[in-house]
Length: 329
Ligand SMILES: NC(=O)c1ccc[n+]([C@@H]2O[C@H](COP(=O)([O-])OP(=O)(O)OC[C@H]3O[C@@H](n4cnc5c(N)ncnc54)[C@H](OP(=O)(O)O)[C@@H]3O)[C@@H](O)[C@H]2O)c1
Image (cartoon, rainbow, N blue to C red; front, side, top):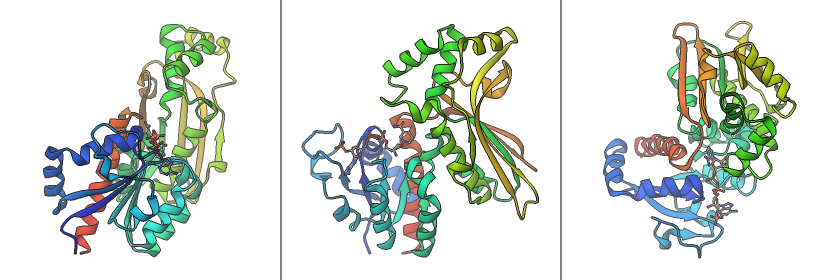
């Protein structure tokens, strides 16, 4: 039995580099050892370019052989993103008996149920808190904290990029097209902003939340989706004249009996009253409101992106996964 819990990190970009720095920080290392019951050991970091120096990461840890790294780990953390080779590496990890953590929303939205089934088959955990709203611990709330309650609905501003655009229009009076351009220049939008502007990113996130809350067998095709590209300056002026703010709202709600729930999901621009809690999300912030039969209305608000913020959720999942490793030893 290893004296440490061996962590393999797949990816050292915006999120992965922040995770690696925290895992290598001696102050954090002592805390994690106390919380897990054994020290965490970063055994390697898979990247494409091993020659590039990475601030705070020992070059000796870098490898281009992600598959070889997976074989040496108790916990495999996938923060490379995309659909190739991430799923094959996660599958390999699970078949080797490793716990798996991922921040890959795109992968989970498309292949989540298959990966969950594979995790169950291999008796390992699949944790993905960072995939939905980065630092905001919403998956744990709907899946674990409210497991004894009946969640009735989830609604939120789950895409910080579109919120940044809509906030510029609503609060700064910037024309819609200019706001999209400014958001692009500031790095809030990808080079191809379709995923964000057409609501696909928000749809993927609401699917993950519906699955976590209700175990629902749903996919992105089940989301009734309208993005923000069809909005005009007239729409914003009308909303403002009526004291409202347009936001891109993602929602999921349960109808039918709890033992046989029917789940509906939507993503669409909505003109909200200024004092609506969802209207309070400024710039790139995210906010989500969860309604549950006994708990009532819960609101979570915070950063829905960013390396450090997302690393917070990934590290939480790593600690949870590492505890499982220690328990099962
Ligand atoms: N950024 C955020 O705020 C945020 C928030 C929530 C969730 N996420 C999710 O977190 C994941 C990572 O995002 P990110 O922003 O950190 O991405 P990123 O900056 O593009 O970093 C990707 C990393 O993966 C490595 N990589 C990619 N393909 C690889 C391959 N085939 N073999 C080995 N290494 C490979 C890259 O290596 P090189 O460095 O050598 O190119 C890079 O280090 C994504 O799934 C994303 O959706 C991100």
